[in-house]
Length: 67
Image (tube, helix red, strand yellow):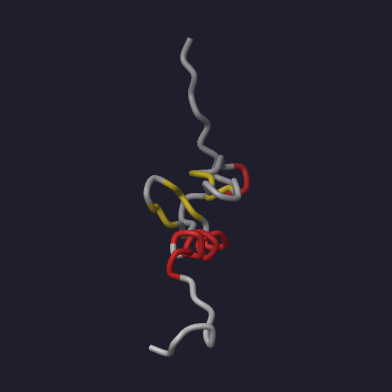
C-alpha cells in the first residue's frame, strides 16, 4: 500500500514545514526562522532563547564598577 502526502494548493491547508522548539508554534514554508544548535526558533522566541543563552553575561547597570 502506497501512502502519498497530499500537496495542497491552498496555503491554509498545507501542513507545517517545522515547529518552533520553544513554543511549538507552526512554521510554514517561506516563514522566517532560526536554526541554532539543533533547535528551530520562530521570531517570537528568538529573544527568549538569546536571553537564556547569554544569562551568564547579564549585569545590572549601577550595581558594579563602570566599564
